[in-house]
Amino acid sequence: MFEKMTSLSESGKAAVKAEIAALESKLAVQQQHIKEAGLPVIVLLEGWGASGKGSLIRDLIRNIDPRSFRVCPIVSPTAEEERKPFLWRYFEKIPPKGRFLFLDSGWYGETIKNVMEDGLDNGAYADRVHSINVFERQLCDNGYLVIKLFLHISKETQDERFEELLESKDTAWRVSELDRRENKRYKKYADAWDGILDATDSPWAPWHLIDGSERAKRLQALQVLTGSIAAALEGRRAKWEIPEEKFPLRSMPLLKDVPLNQEVSEEEYHIQLKDAQKRLAALHNRLYRKRVPVVIVYEGWDAAGKGGNIKRIAAALDPRGYEVVPVAAPEPQELARHYLWRFWTRLPKTGHIAIFDRSWYGRVMVERIEKLCSDADWQRAYQEMNEFERELSEWGAVVLKFWVHIDPDTQLARFHERENTPEKRWKITAEDWRNREKWPQYEEAVNEMLQKTSTEYAPWHIIESTDKRYARLKAIRIVIEALEKALD
Image: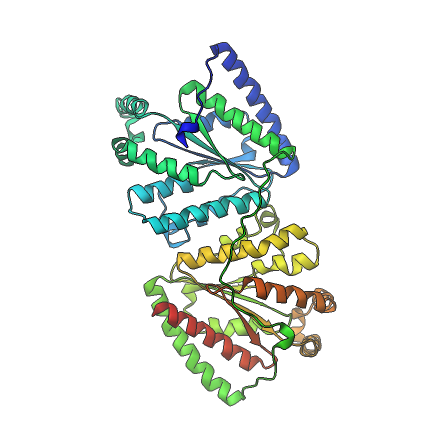
């Protein structure tokens, strides 16, 4: 990859200065166009120690309204961040529509450190590179512009800059121990960087290698930045096809073929529930000790009994180690970002449990049926959600998904019961009745969802819920079985 870098052609100092000024003015105008178009822009700067990433960011933001950007220097992950998936802290930082995010290093710098200093093995490295490509593609597929710059300098130039920095105690702190090791092993680091740059130079997020000399880097970076933004605003970005992946899918029945005549007596229910909750409580302690994260997703028909089902599982858990995440219509700050952002940011840390009452699957149900996103958006989402859940599974999470199922007659009876019971009346809304009228469309969408996203690592389980007691026992037993398998 490094051999593709072209140095800036020699020009007079005055000419370079004039071109930089013109490009800075252009970027200032583009900033307003970005805001109007709702284009979110991520500018990632990677490069050698002392290549000038920080000073380049300072130059690039010079004429941009401070309210339009955020600058994030990336350092080693905290203990809290290490208990989340690798990409969590980067997904959490993505900007809303119409704004810039400038990253001083990022997922690449962290990966190279993991390889060179922490012993990340070849298999884990290959998985990491794949995850990075998927992450960037998902951002770009959903409207983000990702601009990746690598500032390249020679070992000799790095030596000179380190010497200069080390001469003063006010700047010596900028040369870290990691920088020193990088310099000492420059050739091996260069090989590592060359490999990852080549493996992630994609049509949706290509790499731009910048000559790290003082004059060249500013002009080259402005050329790349303004050119990339202009292409995005004018609809001239490179076209790409989403690489199709084969996921290990489980066979799922159609909803109409699921029998709903299962029942449990009240006496048996209380006996079995008490025993199951005791087992689940013990497993929760082991989960925490072994740092295994758990993600449980609940979807289902209105009035199917999701809330009561969640309540019986939560009752067995230590309240300090789980969170129930109710998912309603997205807030403005959520609508302004990638649709998976609000779920990435609510993931549990290792040893904890997150229970989602509704989830990212709204994309292929309510958003699909109510035309809240384009056909391309929801059709692409099946693969995106399989990729998301695979990321969770590879992180070590147990991922379980429940579709709580009833028939239309049972739903109607429960709707009437809610309307006629004062303490339950808040549970029934006009939207519930509107959704009921669209039962056939929802059933078609749910069937497709179950067929396309029930994977071996994140399976769907249909919970028959005409008898709520049966449904609660079935769900908690599935959780227990999955946790025992993961812990053993």
